Image 1 (cartoon, rainbow, N blue to C red):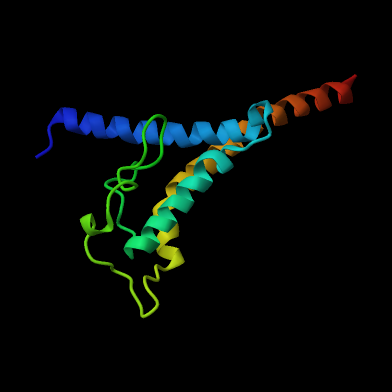
Image 2 (image 1 turned 180 degrees about the horizontal axis):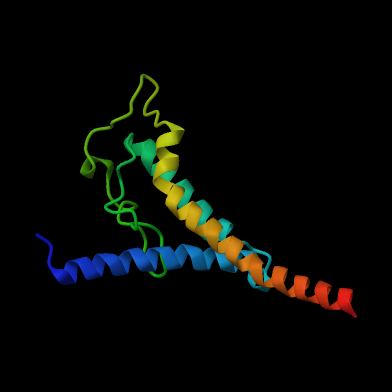
Length: 140
């Protein structure tokens, strides 16, 4: 049975996970002056690495928890593990492992949705600023 501190630690992990991906989405929409979006730097590589690992291992149950993802100064636990540690392939065919795309998407959709929410939030300040400017010029 989990203790109170274990529950608090797990909740803290979920909060950091959510804030990390939302902050990356916000940073992507404001551009940080570089024009290089955080999709190219973080979300895209995360999806690509997960897809490659899933194809190599023939399974998608690689994450120890939904928050087992790329974060600041920490990589996912599944990235450096060998496929034998996960068990035999769940998806295989005569041509090697064939992991369904839908199965992979289910494993990375939470990160993508949180990143998208952050991107939408990052677009709100410019929208409200331009709307306020438009309203003041309309009434003057």
